[in-house]
Structures are given as C-alpha cells and as structure tokens.
Image: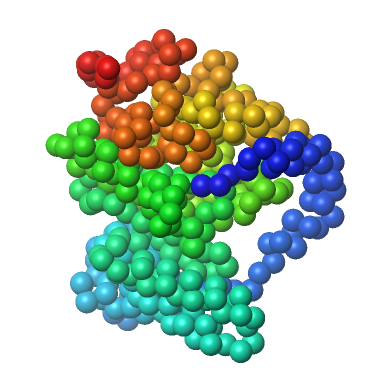
Length: 405
C-alpha cells in the first residue's frame, strides 16, 4: 500500500509533527465532532430493519449482542429461516459477528448485488459530474468482481470509500488462522489491484495463503484480508495520529472474538496497519499468539512490554523501505512512537532483506513472505531472523527445525 510517501512526503510528515498545537486546537473547537456527523448509512438502515424484524413470530436478537448469543440464535433456526434473514437483511447479517461465516458470505453476495445496481444507476445520473459517473462505474465493476468465482466476502460496507474483508481457505475448519491488516489508502477500490497486486489486501492475503500451504501443506490454514476499517486517505492528520487506528481496533477485536473455533490466530500488520494492531493488542483474545508487523511507523507504545499482550511480537523492515526515515516519536498525539525493529523495543526482528521497498513484503519468493508464512503456520524453527537479533528464536514452542540456507 502507499502509506506515508516518499522523500517529499517525509518532509510533510515532519511538518505535521510540528503542527501538534494546531491539531489540538482543531480537535477542541468541534472539528473532530463535525467529522463524525453523518446521515444513516445503508448498513445502519439494514441494522435498524433487523431490530424491528421477526422470525417464526419472535423478535430478532440485538444485532450488537455477544457473538456467542447470536451464534446460538442462528443455530436454533432452520436453513430456510437463516437464508430468509440473509436475503431480507443482507448488510446486517453480512457484517454480524456471531452469524455463521457461510451465511455471511451469502448475505454479502446479496448486498454486493444491491450495491452494484445502485452504482449502475449512478453511472447514468446526470446530476453527477463525468468524474463521478466514472467512479460509479469503477465501483460497479469492483462489486461485480467481488461477487464472482465463489469469493468469500466476510464483511462489506459500501458507504463512502467502503470497507471489506475476504477469507481465503476454510475458516470454520482451519487449524491456523492468519489476519492481514493493511495500511493507508485502503478502500473498496484499492482492496485488490491488477498492477502491484501484492501491495493490496487481497493480493497480500492470497500470497500469504499460498505460501502457508507451501511451507506446511498438512496444516489447514485460512487467511483473512481484513480491510474492515476506515483507513486514512493519504498523508494528513488521520495518518499521523491514532484516530483511525482506535476506531479500527474496536472493529478488529470484535471480529477476533467472533472467529469460529479455538485455533491459534496470527496477525500480520503492514504500515499503518501496525499502528492499528498496536492499539488493539491489549484487548485481543488470548488465541492471538503472534503479532508480526512490517514497514511499521510505530505501534503507539515505547516497547513490547507496553502492548499488554501475551502474543509473540515480530517486526521486519527491508533496508530499502523509506519508512525507516520517518521520525519514530510521538508529539501532541502526532507520530506513532518507538521503532519496532529497534533493540530497545523488544520485538523479535525478522529478515526482510529482499522485500524491495515499502510494499514488497508479501511478494512471492521473498524472505519476508517465507518468514510470515512460517509464523502463520507455527513453523517457528524455520524462521529466519535478522542478523542483529541473535535471540529472536528464544523461548519458541516446539523443536527447532533446520534453518534455511
């Protein structure tokens, strides 16, 4: 993903750090509050309709109740009743933590079809500018693509720039689950790319899933491309602060608590996604056993000990990644704190010498991707550490495997 930018953007980043006082003034004069005022979205409308709905003569449960209770509710229904709810309230069911994952896939397919028709109509809406009509066409084709080929869309919200999550593999039967959390400039139109495909969430997750199956074919794995938060758009206040990360952390932990089964979960957080994972770490369920960050500008804490997690924390950064030049500090809410690959931070530092830049960590054939796949499958003995971190394998579970040459 494009995160904070290249050399000119770094200068802007430094300028933003110097504007901490301005940010505080804006936040305290109502600017932040104004940004939060929005009309009801399609998802909110679907949830409201659910709250007034019935099945079999009984009222439907609170859609925001505990996932375990919602899971029991859906289990009590007949297949026909479940399918009727997915058709009647597709956005509500498609984003409902606690609903069966395959029912969420089905509901989101319905929701995508409805959103596609909305954009198809907007393509010919004379009230829109030519650029607006063109964007409607791009969104329409994106929704159509997300409906194709049996894709497993776990979350979908077409509002504004949009949010989504997609699963690769069998989530319900997986023995290991990996979650990829992307960074800045992630939305529905950048959820996947034709060019630079491995810099987008779908490409990252597909590449990781293939690599995991390669390193440990006998282990059933599932990978989630999780772009179900409103990421910062470009360089600005949002990307320089934790505001988007804090909102996203709530959504991420809601998903993690609702994942089926009890299998171990590994987090793979890229760029600003690592800020989000740092904020979320304290409240992650204990089944999260690994948090690996790549190209991180910081995790909003001075060290691993301050993350408040029992998970192993890994970090990697390629020597050609410009993020190394971002000031690792926090001033007045701007900046993201200590460098995760620094010895003082205390993470296990991984080799990523061939990642080739800020967006190359999930490229097939790289050391970085192999390391991520080893962590995702629990093949810790095969992990290749950075030369400067001699103790990165200390205390790992299981027997050490032979290191790769």
